[in-house]
Image (cartoon, rainbow, N blue to C red; front, side, top):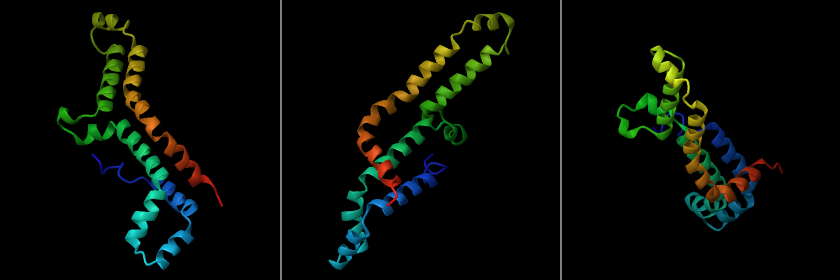
Length: 154
């Protein structure tokens, strides 16, 4: 479930590359080389602490991508124990559309015409977006800083 389409996005690579080029000074890395630091030490003690905004931004993007993904559940999973919430919401929406199109007998179709389809859709939207609304405030500080720093040309 992790590998297909969500593990590495070209957009995320471009955001990180732009952030590294525009916000981490090359002179800082050169100074670390002159002090005798190796590649791993420079990365772990200099680059990673300075990259918290872009790491949080990519983390938020990945969280949103995984949370909204229903297609991979449909294609790759066979047991209902592992289906995502988004898959179930999509399945409910498709069932409602099928029932309201009148593909069943006339009596049941008349009873289902009073089904509040828009109300069900809005309730599903609240269920789908609720956890992300609660997670966003923790990422907000880093999210805005990470996107704006990578967008400035110097």
